[in-house]
Length: 178
Image (cartoon, rainbow, N blue to C red; front, side, top):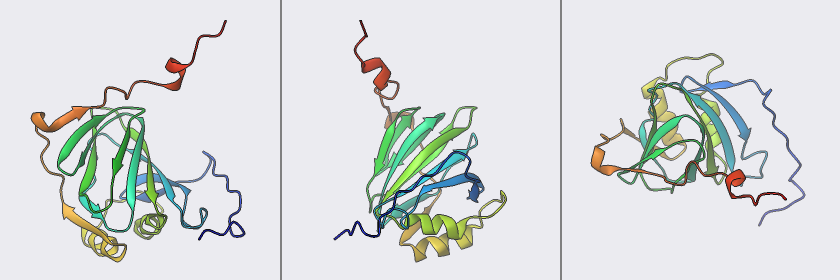
């Protein structure tokens, strides 16, 4: 049962200094601590060509919202190409990963439910950009019940789908004012 006594309003601004998770500028927008364990919200800026390892979470569901750039996500063996405004859900126990496409960086919000994954991010983070230590990544991930399976599977032309709704916005749906 959630007790509201422990919940306090929390604000996080764009002026927060980044940490570097997997060498990427990262801001913890919300943590399990600030949300009473309900969720964690992480913002990442990723250079072109960046790819996460193929991995599976055993404790949390992971969702992604692309803010800028073009990305490809693989979830359960199916690839999806995603641009700004695209939401991708990666349920726990389903292998998944992502990569940045094209020649521009990508920025995304990563939501993990319940909270706790943010502790993994903190433990793996550095004060300055540095390439990840794969042995450390694998060991720390296991501590947080995340299995690193290796590099992403190959993306073949026949397995990629594109979200047709990714370019739609609420502005497009709003009725015209008279």
